[in-house]
Image (tube, rainbow, N blue to C red; front, side, top):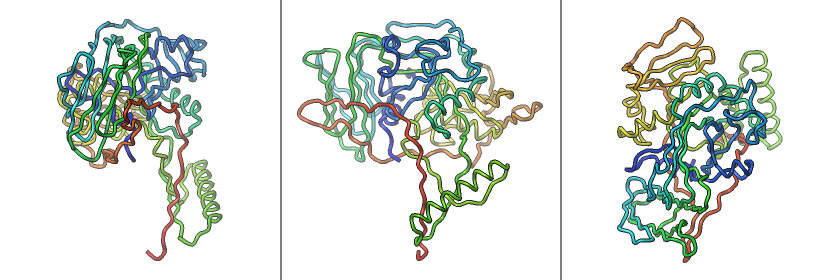
Length: 444
């Protein structure tokens, strides 16, 4: 599966020399389906939603708003109770007007109106900020974490109904902070070669806040210029991962001579047997391979890797929760997105943390280094046993499954022409999963 545009942009803009601000969004603009007054301000603290493959945050509801608030027009989860937003800290110039770019990209001396970049890296990302960026961050995270711990399963059920997806395979995200501006231009690329190339960013003739991007190799580029401070370029918050509702795959191996009709009959029987088996509390032997549609896979996020680790170490847990502050701290110490996909590197950075658990709701999460703990992050917590306590261990499970880094080339959405073009993003969507049936060749 090839990286999505958001995968490439987020992976490479997370790690740069200018500080780590949070999770980058390739589509900073508010969703067009949100109430108009909400669009004027953009994302808010307390928003719960998902980041789609195009890089837009899809708001489901806001935990700080009443159920009859306009932003909660689609309803709220069961047992919903609005949370009073605690104190926040703000900075009108959290990021100065400048360009942010990933390692491997070199910035040449620019003229008064233009930027010029060179790169021989196989992948990278650039964010140009014509105006300063403001930030707003929740000071205390404790109450939000507690609410997420208690309500995670209700939120997930609500999301499944909202997207009409019984096996939603995405983490939910609770926003606790954001960085906003009025205007931006961005680009990302992934290519099979490491030849030297250039990216030029020229100020528009009619709008000095919008840069037109051209390059000597294929790039994905977007830009926006406006007056409202509602463009969210970075977010911080809790990533909430729930163990998959989808049972283990059913494998249906079919001989090459089978007709389409017989395949459909076998498929129906396999699902019927599975349904009966699950209804009676036992499994039926079946044979069908079920694979997720690649478009369903959520964009790369470091917290998803950490949550997967926590869930693998705590089999009784149903939910894992990680805040962006934790992986950001790791990256400041030198961790890269590649390290998250290597168990030995990840373990080295997780050794300074401990695992906390909330047994009633079967939730696990990291306790920060600032709590004064020094034990390893690899204890197993039996959430079904109220007498169990974390046991420190230095071993990492050998069967921890970490997805490999995808390598296919990024599709081109901003072709190089004589004049700059800005790609128009498709509307956010969550596609249905597909079923893949494999046919076996009896003569092989």
